[in-house]
Image 1 (cartoon, rainbow, N blue to C red):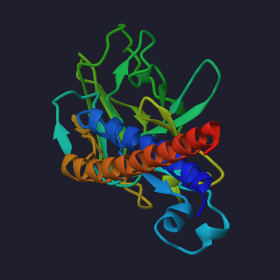
Image 2: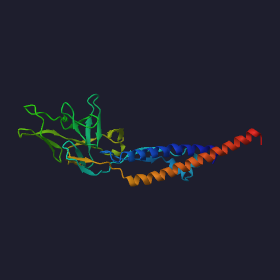
Image 3: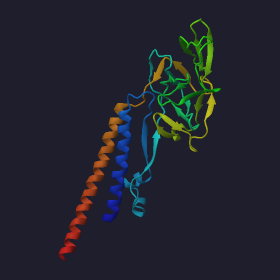
Image 4: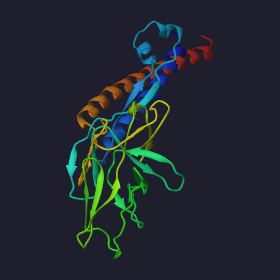
Length: 264
């Protein structure tokens, strides 16, 4: 194999494994982030070629990142005693909407609060959606907010007011995807539908495999730190191997051009 091919393959390896290290570093940085889902790097077919498959001799293109895939394994559930903290025990996603542009996103992060209009919102202000649209907590006839809120496993949100009146103020819906690993990561624990994920099924919690919802509870990050450090060591080793190979190839070219320059 030519020195030029070696250079191309090693350079692609540095770029690819560098990106993989960034994915692992992001996982580790978010190991304590509520509702965070870790990701893994999927390498292209060139990875097999770089490990000795003969096709590399025909197409020395090196290693590429095929995809960065989110992993939606269940995170641990932690009681918070905050009635606006919701968690999903199952496969569904909360649905949130940007009122400015109508964009719908999906999240596992149920760390909600109320905005000035009484809308139930996520940490970046997107409004949580239910079967009738925005979930809004109304005041009673005297202008009082509820003294307590209770969330049932099937997503019914009940409010108790100062006079003792109990009123159902919202019904959560959850989104379920046939291929959730194909969702696009938008940051801030938000995901978007793609052609690969398919359109969501909108379900009442505790039905159709969506999972039950639990109040006063948050889902913790699903990052397994031990696994991430093992993966990091492996990827760093591959990165260093490519760096060493690239350095050796560069030295070879430097020596060759020096010889050519001296006319030897």
